[in-house]
Image 1: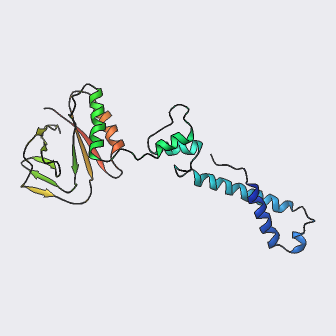
Image 2 (image 1 turned 90 degrees about the vertical axis):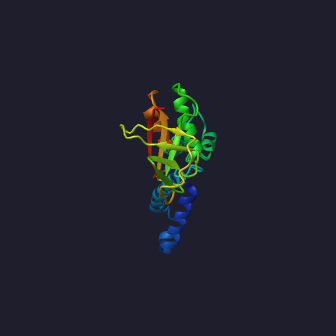
Image 3 (image 1 turned 180 degrees about the horizontal axis):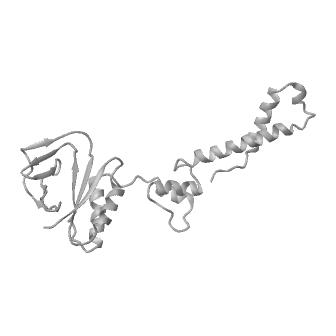
Amino acid sequence: MPSFIPDPTDVANLVAIYRSSVPPDIASAERDLDEAYTMATIIASALASVRAWARNIAIGSALGSGLDAQGTNVGLSRQGSELDEPYRARLQLPPAAGTWQSIVDAVQSVVTAAGGPAGSVYLVELPRDGACFKDGFYCRNNLKTTIYPLSQDSGVVSVSMNVPACNRGKRMSGGPVRMVIALIPAGYNVLRACTDMLRSKVSAAKAYLVQEYTS
């Protein structure tokens, strides 16, 4: 929360500015300058609040509830009665998100917890360096040994492993990844949980989708 307690130094500096700005008789040391101290206290209180707000917009300087708000922004919270400094250190760790491997590992952890087999989660990213479409198959351009046939029945996706890469066919190129699709095995009732996990791992402005496949 912002602090409304004025800094005495700010009050003194503001009163000094007031003294230098008014006629000598008003600024006389014989006067108690109640009006100057009143205005200086009000302005200094506002300065204290602005400083608190400015401090709390960055993880490196936020305190207390301000640091809690920074944690909420990145999906983390205090562990028990965790103090500001260890909590801040956790918040400042670069997130293991956004990379192909980190996304697969995170979604796989959900599938594994539900009893699914290891190594059963796959990823499609479109476009990256580019995407190739040939004979009903989409493939990640830089994952040459795995392609993902997209079937027509209710959006169910099946997986075909160790098929030669698409060397011919239509190529869709351009820019960074805009769509991230995670493929998970059907039958483990984790579609929603995997979608939540994928949402937390992909970068902002990317579309995402989880599809179940049957082998």
